[in-house]
Image 1 (tube, helix red, strand yellow):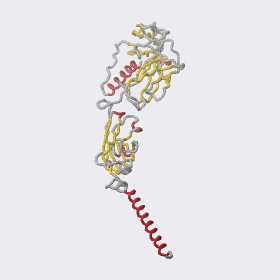
Image 2 (cartoon, rainbow, N blue to C red; image 1 turned 180 degrees about the vertical axis):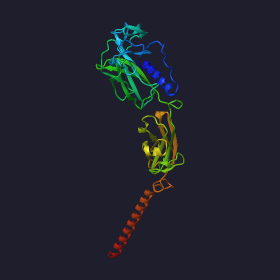
Image 3 (cartoon, rainbow, N blue to C red; image 1 turned 90 degrees about the horizontal axis):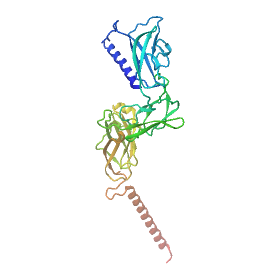
Image 4 (cartoon, rainbow, N blue to C red; image 1 turned 90 degrees about the vertical axis):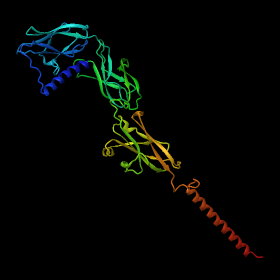
Length: 388
């Protein structure tokens, strides 16, 4: 159905391009015989074609009529009610028509002025199509087309199911389709962003829950080398204070244990939906750092920018720790290294115990010494004042 439509549109576009480019289409010679044009040629039983008569000068009061054994009745080519909007006059093919070739004639005032053939194709079982070339990509939006043109099919309520969808999708009856009155569709259906690569069954049920058609959606994430892979990730990089995003660096950054470090990530073309799920992980972090999309800074820095804070574990041993960001659904993984030092105000370099602990111990010892001295002085006074 849609393939025929594409051929019709392509022909019109080509003609427009040639004309617009100054390459005039050849003029119709006066002696060229009238010919019949068929839009959506090769119909199935129940479909319709568009019929037009070319190279013929219509005369007032002379009716043009298309006739064929496959038609239920002659088709008036000058009937405004059958106008398809540029593809001729609608000529329905009965659902009861048998596959085969049928003669077609156009008469003007009862006289045959053109001949052609209508090739009726066999019926096709109901089918569901997921629009898109090749494998589906996680996070993209797809269109669904359900073709229910088959003898005996009469339902009007259909739902498409697939675990790749967030929820079942209700299909709407396409009332604008004049050549196939049993087309149902849904547009801009998003695929879940977290899909794993592989095949996903798609099926359609009617109002009673009966399966009417089945298909398969092949999902595969774009990888480096694919035509639609546009990722160009950079990072992770680090900066120490909020507001210093553009000063972030991926090498040679040092942070003290217990402090907060900020992680920056850039990607020229993130995957759909990735703005909401990027994180940076490290054994030095108390928890993964969620990287938020920054529209303003992204504009300033050209490529989209993501950043977020991460708390370094208190008391973490000094050393170099990896920080990793995984993007494009696992296809891109980048690691930078962060140097962690001890807080000099909290640790004694000689024995590794917190300085505050030693200060507390010293204070306690001093207090204890003073109390003992006071006790001894008081005792001596009492002994000297006692009668001998």
